[in-house]
Length: 480
Ligand SMILES: Nc1ncnc2c1ncn2[C@@H]1O[C@H](COP(=O)(O)OP(=O)(O)OP(=O)(O)O)[C@@H](O)[C@H]1O
Ligand SMILES: [Mg+2]
Picture 1 (cartoon, rainbow, N blue to C red):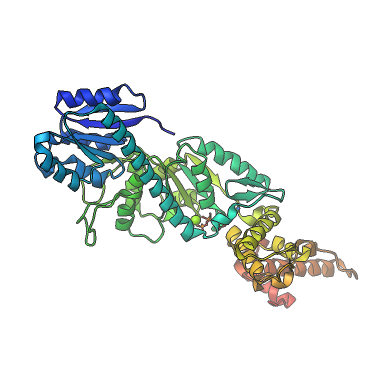
Picture 2: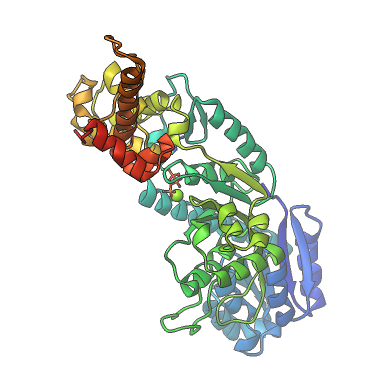
């Protein structure tokens, strides 16, 4: 946690300067920056991460000078204090009201009061920052995974966990080590993997293991979003920048200042937005739509894609320089079918999770049901397994086992792996007949595994689609 707080003091009055310096200047918790004009202060606000601004009302002649009003909109989490001359009390009260300052005080400035008020104003801005982080986090978890709270489970099974990621496989263990290393750096991270493999979960795990854990992680899905929307979501906009822009918008990059922005489906951004993002990654500066003021944002980018970016780069569909920028660390989450040893652990984990949620006591899962779950190829990866278990838990009998009869229809054709072991026909016949019998078994089992998706089965078998169709016809195979 950062302990030093940056205070901007805007005054030309030596007595105010002396009092505030005496109150805060010697305290190592504060870094005092003294400025002689509201304009200078407005500029400084964009350059440093300030926590408090103390402004002398004498320097505010008109609304253009009122840095406190501007700060209220552009830097809502910076505490604001106004100092005024006693003869000017009415105007000060009015200024204070318009800028919603934490406090206004009249000269001569009391050191004790400044010290106390500075402390309270900082506490308030910290509380409002935490409130922002939590509301945002809550909203995300409510949208994405309403049961995430149920993860307060006791780990009974022999599985490992990296934050909310559950695994036993060596592949996932290696990946977690790499992800922890990535978390310890400030480099951008690119997470690739098929849909439902846990890319967002991994991004959160990285954020919560990084130095940025006390600041927010904001999520932006880049798929199916127009450039203009994406620009205003990420970089912000000023009022009137486009039809419907009725108020200033901060943008996620600045809202997540000090934290992380997770850009999902990064492969989908347009060539022109690729340029904007590259510029941001290079300069760390954002220019809201409709504004020509550059502002600084200190965020770490974690991007995810379920389309292989390298291939898109080779095809010229994604900028190579942006790809290299994004992949400070490149993490690949393997598909669930490539780490079947995770299936029993995940199954157990999800049973506990959803049994807790729906208040149902489930004793466990039968061997044959688990064997079927293990043999399936999960095009939807962990999400698909999770949905299946959630459904099964809901329909299982109270106090009973989850059994094969609770499985949904996609599992009907799945044959447990042990059934797949191909035996030679007993009445052997000649070599040609044996080979054909074997071929029929191999082709049929591949078709079942792929739910009769002939393109996928053909690919798996190394056949052309026509070649596969011929074999289906020859052996009279049918979808059961
Ligand atoms: N290893 C895991 N342990 C526990 N839950 C997991 C794991 N992997 C994925 N999940 C769960 O699977 C679901 C999908 O995960 P997530 O949204 O992170 O996937 P994704 O790769 O971002 O998917 P998409 O590409 O479709 O956006 C979530 O409900 C998540 O909690
Ligand atoms: Mg996702």
